[in-house]
Image (cartoon, rainbow, N blue to C red; front, side, top):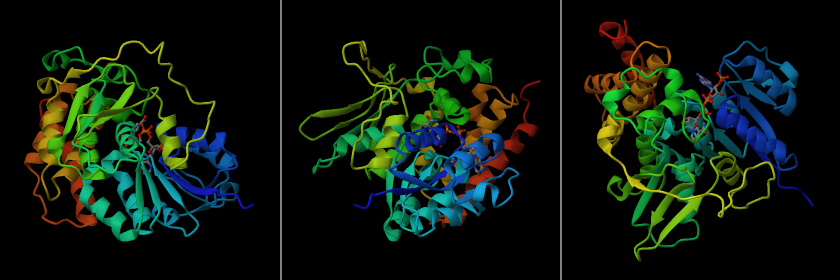
Length: 381
Ligand SMILES: NC(=O)c1ccc[n+]([C@@H]2O[C@H](COP(=O)([O-])OP(=O)(O)OC[C@H]3O[C@@H](n4cnc5c(N)ncnc54)[C@H](OP(=O)(O)O)[C@@H]3O)[C@@H](O)[C@H]2O)c1
């Protein structure tokens, strides 16, 4: 009997989601063949991955010669579109993941999407490209994955999506009190361990606005039918309300293992003793609070521009990337993130009916404009 081995490419294999994807592959050696791995600059870890998983192709920004470990170097956009590839996990961080994600969709692949900035940049282009290419997008981000799992098997449209938010590192402080917080403090997420950018986006709640935008496109539902609620325990990953008032929730441990594995094995579920389990008796109380939007200026700002057509949402994703980089490098204060993003967006000239290239260019422009802007500001002395 021939086994159904899924042939996989991972974009961003050295990151938090990328390494956890490889943990799943390692746990099921008979179910996956790694065709391609792609990364940025973490060459030591990438070489370890090439040695262990022996892909046919790799793409890196580091210095590794083609032929290393028997793998051929090729652009990520080409690797994802190889005929033998079944599924591509987009686990790169930021706007840089757009070209390879689009290439995978054009080639009709299944795209496991963790790299949310890509769908924030232009949700309608991504969905349209998937439709035209006969491709499928499966969410890996835990909140959209939860919504997807709540919708599985339902024939009726949901009346409301309720996305949960931990509230981030500073959930019990006012915005005005955050002037002097350091990158190290902002990188201490109360419930999740993730890459640096998403952890800062979680502290500003930019990340939650990105998930609202992501869900609007993935589930083709108007913004007005998406709510966010503060849920400190990060156990209910999101909820869906139906017309009869039924609320369905998806619960799980604070682990990306389950959403990654669900996308990789969809529609099956497999036992995996490496993944943490949730015990209903010991999990404790679950609380849900209304979100006070005044505490999170990035949330409102992101939704204002994320709802606009043209290239505004690409500029939003790009501007945020620049501002987070400046904060992490100690160049601006935490509270200056929304100011910088807002200034860049106010200066943006949006293009109507943008192409994919226009979208990528708008994001690039916004990142560079934001990075350049701090030179003209009176910021940290
Ligand atoms: N981490 C989570 O738990 C989580 C949960 C939900 C959604 N997400 C989303 O998933 C995405 C990845 O997050 P993460 O936390 O895994 O990020 P991360 O740990 O920072 O990893 C990012 C990955 O992207 C690669 N990369 C960075 N710049 C690149 C470039 N210019 N070209 C090619 N590759 C590049 C990095 O390579 P090097 O390290 O080798 O430079 C690394 O492999 C983000 O969009 C995030 O919002 C993450």
